[in-house]
Length: 67
Image (cartoon, rainbow, N blue to C red; front, top):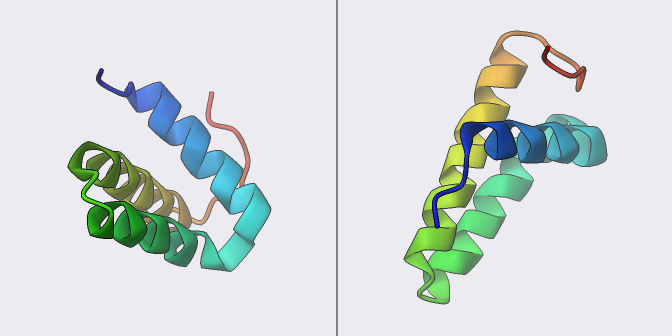
């Protein structure tokens, strides 16, 4: 099952709200955990979430929803 871009952005938004400046670190840690467990598909999803967090933070957003 493919995770939609909207779901990726929603997850990124939630992680930023929950973890603030260390949201990317939290996402990277989860991706590493899934890779270590052999869940390649899960790891790919979390790497997409990580990329969304990095983009969001690079653009200076502070957890505000994107319309």
